[in-house]
Length: 278
Image: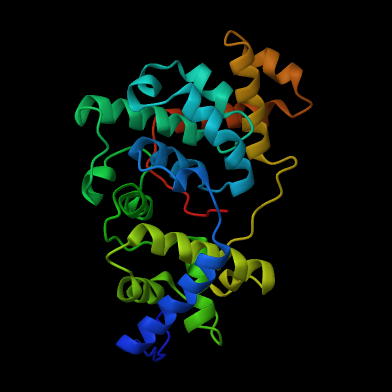
């Protein structure tokens, strides 16, 4: 779909005014979140992966448990997947737990236990795409890196594309780059995200005007729910058979088999990232 032919005034004065508005709200109403209090790259990585497709409230419960159980890359790399999934239980999208373990293994083996500091190197890690790599650079290392996620998208659509629909991220990204506070990427993105959360609470969700907007499917009866049930059963009993799984759930046998096959494909490795955050 072609970009809209719209003119966005981004003079130095307009950029300054935009930043002031976002920061003014943030300094009054910014959220206090544990991953914002640390500069530990490992802890920030964990929070970034957890926040993909999961509301902040749920991450607030699980983040301290996970980082206490697995405090660093070496501990996570050595931990059995079963134990990791047990701690992860309740978060959903369980492939992220696998990604975290694989990331930890790669960081230990290839980067001497230190999280890399370039987008190119970060994108070699499982489950990390360009947006997640840029967000890690900003939050863990305060580096100048442009990225878009759902709350940031909401801010830019609300402020610059209010009268348009089907706004593409290609139209938003240049504005993100031009308005970025290069001296303090970390605080700027925190401010943008909190402003986006506020917009969603007080206005019709601006992200619905995005060309990338997708409604979340129903969880009850979904394949996602079935995979969660399977993982819970397997972590409780690693020796459980396929026939026992089918008997345990009131679900058609083929659906159980299809989801087992999907889990096997995921555990074989994938580099897809989920950028929606709470």
